[in-house]
Length: 215
Length: 413
Image 1 (cartoon, rainbow over the protein chains, first blue to last red):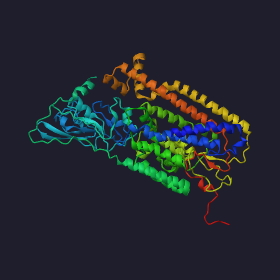
Image 2 (image 1 turned 30 degrees about the vertical axis):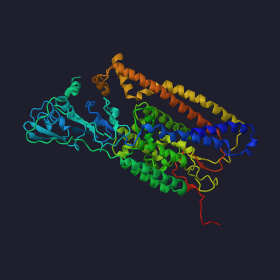
Image 3 (image 1 turned 90 degrees about the vertical axis):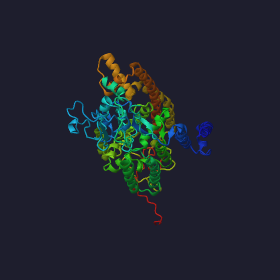
Image 4 (image 1 turned 60 degrees about the vertical axis):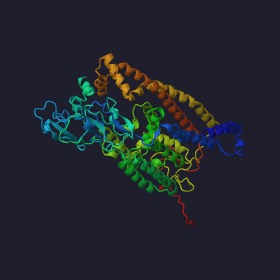
């Protein structure tokens, strides 16, 4: 491309002065570029084509087939509640997930029960989750298994905060990649005060908390 | 403060229980992965629809076909794929990947950026005619076209250049994606959006009933690129299928002011005078470029407000110096996170420097564009018939039916 452009310029340097001095002779002196207008057109075309054609070459090292997805780094997240409010989807594509290997299976669960409850029960007024998306199942004395119902979860992060403040931190927020619509700029990422939402590789779409409790 | 420490130290308070009842740990509760194959279907459909639009606009000359293609594009690229990926926004991804080392651009996004430009170079703005979902929704709702006064129109069409410059600047400095944030119709495609987006989109659609395609004409930053590329197109839609008879029937039908009248009857100026004006304007281009460069370089502190880190630094500084309490969520998180103020202010200085460089380039681009448009105003082409303005024409085909010339294979008379 560059070589071609140079030859064109060379021709222009030779040809245009001839035309300017000799306007009458222009008509006889027709060759490949019939008029200056045609020449400008061709040169302009090459000038604008070259950068676009060269884009894949310039970006060759920065192109990936898999692309990026948005994900929350659970270690940066402060459970501020923006995930619920700022997602373009209602309810948000952000959902709480549960790392069972980290869970202490507490009876007095900070993620399940509101602070300062008088009784430990499954009654709605005792539950931390505003949408009752967490259910608990008795395993054995004194342990309970907690499960999140994703259809009900709206990503408010109240349970995550409760679990992090009073428990093991086994609950955390992740963007559900099946629900996410992959906005070019994630609305949550723009509003996240702690920069916890960022682009991650398509190959590793979740950033799970893997640390095993008691190890 | 206490809360944050609790978060950092929280984990591992209680040991993992040793169950006696043979309890089996459930799978780590993670949602499903994304299937990426849709994007490849999108690229294939983009090429297909662009080819079809070119054929409909140039060979078949069918406005009806283009309308139906718009309906399809609106349904698929708009409502099914919910407006993403779109070439309009891909400008920012390209800018981000060009100026940042750690961002990789998905191949599909790069293709979405390049393919419509290649088609524009070959066949004009066929992308706008029947493929772009944003264009389609406006084309299909433009019922009562009204022409704006020429002066208003020519001022308004400079806005996309500014918008393109600012959004590229904003993306290249990792600040924000302006085009996506202020996309008016994506909320309609998703049937779900912040109310500001819905109001903006709704207002544009209502205005679009009379002032057709307001977003395309006065905002679309990708339209600027298509406009430039289309001016050099090898083949382009024509108003008449054969020879223009200068009947002037098509003169007022284009809602986009994209029909250039024939100038056989226009009085010709002295060639000497015309040439002198042309040369003056060409000489003026570097001056416009320099003026734009200086102006935007000096305006750069204004643009740095686009960056959230700069906003945060300003807020923190206001608290420190003027005692205005910093209460935004970002400021609260900053105070908890333990990053020092010096780090933040150093970062702010670096971002300022990037913006200064970037703004200078934007100013240069705008200055050159302004100079070139003056030059193109001063040059006079000899048109013997009515032709579409290759840059402005959306190849929508509204003018076809007004041309009385028909090519008939069974010769008449």
